[in-house]
Image 1 (cartoon, rainbow, N blue to C red):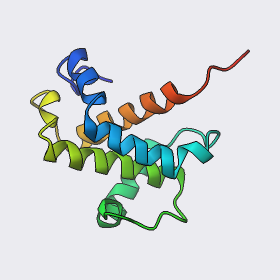
Image 2: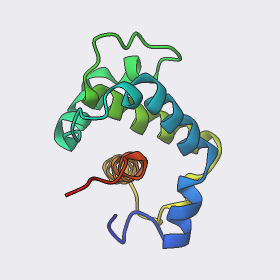
Image 3: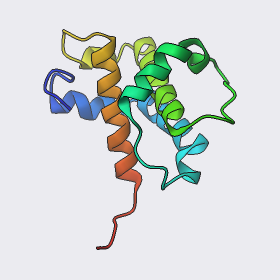
Image 4: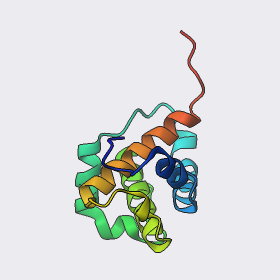
Length: 124
């Protein structure tokens, strides 16, 4: 996370514990991560391109996810978390100068953190 995305580390922790993040990540776990632990990390550039291209489809209540790539699931997490956060007025945790690009980047970083936190430690 960059310092400009969340006002404080406390705001970041509160945001991660919010229902918006929990609900969106539960969907991500159920629909993708549980069966694709080795799918690799998503590409942020491709994720934002998918958001721009498929914005309406990604925000649908129950989109058809059968042919989705890992990046589509990441894009869905970002948009769903953003939507739920706006509804719950949780975006006040971000600093005062955020835009869509900053929001998407912050939510992408939250997703990466959550994915890593659910992975078992590796033995080297």
